[in-house]
Image (cartoon, rainbow, N blue to C red; front, top):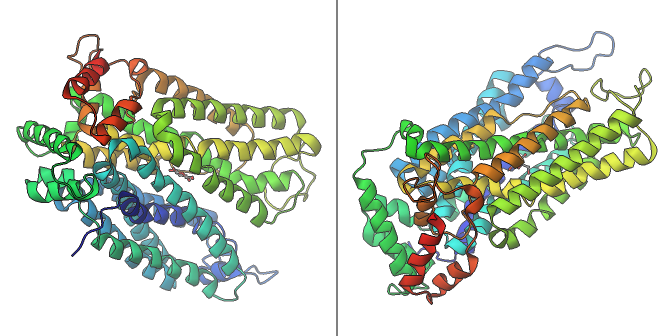
Length: 520
Ligand code: BGC
């Protein structure tokens, strides 16, 4: 089958896997309070006075909601084995098929166990796709565009959240079970596109090389990086780098998760895992969840459409600057600036609520979660600062949390290491249902901690050929720190050199000089 070599096209198809993650996030929130849902899954029976369906009790609803992240956690972990064994591309295709199966079960579900099973299966698929799509794109991208291309996964997530929210909101006006069956059925379409689209995409050249499929590996690099010319300088250099690494790695037996804990890998393992833990502890999901409460507490009504729609649109639009510039900015500055601003908005929200709010009058708001009332200018400032928070996460921690982990590891452990890092996303992926302003303070403290952590321990990886990132973590180099490698604050982004290398006008001496500079 003829394969497509345009890297943007390859990434655009692959990140549909990220879109499924977005669907996952918003597939429940607009549905759980609708009558068709409550009546179909009416564990508590009808209210004796009003006759209204009461749906599942809150604990069980918590379980139904958590079934998806639970499945994703497992799917991400398992994806490391699958992807090392059968390939990056094929494992994403398997993820797409699993999504379709899960969606059929959720869409057709007639009782709570069936719904839980459907959601676990959907989650499992999202775990596989969201861990292996970044690995696949990382291994097939030229270094100077890697951030942007993997960052497209975050963009797809934000699109997925927004599209699914609008579909669910729109369908909530349809009478009967179609209100939830339609969205849960429609979500199959992108997964089918993902599966079919990938049939025309090449496999990761690095995975092929690792499986000793050298000719295919070279053919992919020629197609994607060499504009069809097998003798292009870039293709020859990449092949030489890959060969060196694969041959070196060949001496090691097959990798297990335990290898990630060895002295030369533990630093990287902790950085990758913390990348995802911190991305969750920024409080982004809590902020997104709170926006409807904040609107109600500010006296702007209880309709979820407007506050959520504004927020999801900001999230999509503000991811775009990262796609354009994140490779130029580098990973470290982007993370540091993001943590700084998010911390600021958290502190402003905490301060305003602490000083200007009052307890609500009995019955003033529909939900006990809306535990404070606030009016006038402070209320407007809180809404603005909540949106500014989303606008700060979207171009920074959102995309970098997907771009950074796969860049850190050598080929032989990449599949499993990214799988582990991604599983940490779900272990910490939660939204606190009950509002209190003190939560803002807790997240502000986390944001401060991640700023310090990134400054001291997260090195710059942007624009470095993957095989070169290795040198940063080599702690036998002079000037490096034991078990850590080159101090993170001494690493930098050599974009100009990389762009020249990709154009083919860098001499070997210069390239060696570049590596040397980094390891000092
Ligand atoms: C995070 C999700 C979050 C989303 C928001 C992703 O990077 O992993 O937890 O909901 O960004 O855009």
